Image 1 (cartoon, rainbow, N blue to C red):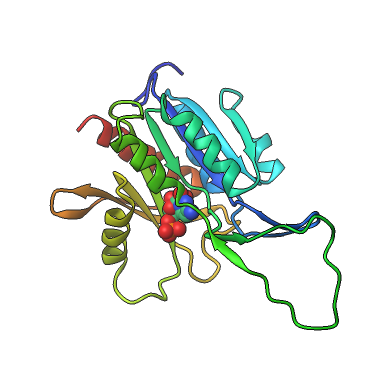
Image 2: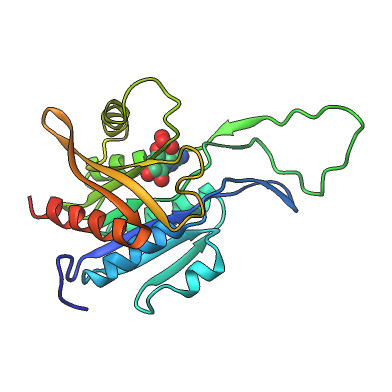
Length: 235
Ligand code: C5P
């Protein structure tokens, strides 16, 4: 619809999980299904946004259920996701980084399928760029859409020291984004499931401020997150 709290806004959501090739048939990956990101982009479209999903290995069934109005770009590796995000930086009003990005990739992918050697194998990994941090830097350098809102996700298992709030605080500062959606993925929660529980924080003058708490289906949670995005845009 052309109406709604995000009417006319270009909203880009990254979803799923990046995969880093080890050889032509193997990769390092993660358990993200892309359901939360898909629900978010659908909620953004329902709120009137011109919505784009950058899908990193999102289940085909999840993609098939997207509203027709959502533009989909498929990527595989972190480098491809980074390039796709950078291509949207100049015109996106909102970028929501819901994708689970591989923090490391193999230093080199083997050209041919790796063979067993009969001995232990050590694989050298190099750190991937932080895409969200890079988007913040583009914006700070004046190379992004004016007023662009950048939203990060924090998937935490709660095994760290300190509260959700202090983790959110630290991550907001480290990333420099405007909103952070804190997602508890401990136990069975979140990955591949249809329900979720999140807390949304904003970067206030005094640090992380809680804006919304939401629990329920990924669709319901997404509606609340998109409402928080629209509210932040009109602050
Ligand atoms: O630091 P951490 O991985 O917990 O941060 C998660 C947030 O940062 C998510 O929004 C994720 O999409 C984004 N991210 C990124 N590039 C990375 C790692 C995470 O954009 N290399």
